[in-house]
Image 1 (cartoon, rainbow, N blue to C red):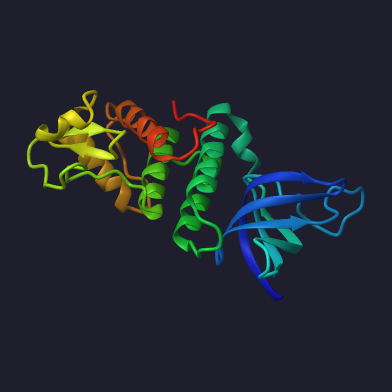
Image 2: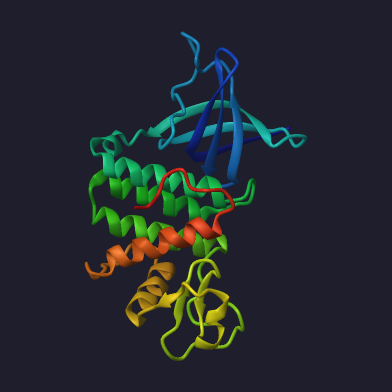
Length: 240
């Protein structure tokens, strides 16, 4: 068994027997991992972190190799981010962020860019740095691109031709449809160049850009539709 140390953001936590827990966490070096932390729920334990969701920790774990559940032998709290709980909307966005990561990021594939995206978003939310809705939209669009789930913004999803005029947005089809392919989704609606340009810019920048206030509700609605169609399981926390 290999012994590894890395920083980790806790995504989910489950009780395991009387005193232990299992966690799903996104690590800086090893991607998403599932781990077992023994004795953490007992009255006396050797851990300095309770491994709560939405916290940043330094963990030491054994790579069991024979199982996807690894033994976490040490965990030290680096950032509890208690400010996330000061506002219900902030907490909802933070919870949605870790939920999406847990849904779309595969196990045990190094994802350092995704780790830093999540960490940066949670820290900005905790500090009140920026418009929370802009942070949410940027996080979703950037995560989808990094995970390979991004909507198709310049080609028709049905026939793959470049859409040179105003395309039509189809969450069901995964992006744009040209006029000739509207029969694929009769409910597709015209997509404005401003919306498509904003989605493209959001997907390519590490820091959330400023957004036109009028675009924010449109982007939220379109992304909500997209997530419901493109994620295998229904989202428990909606974006609107």
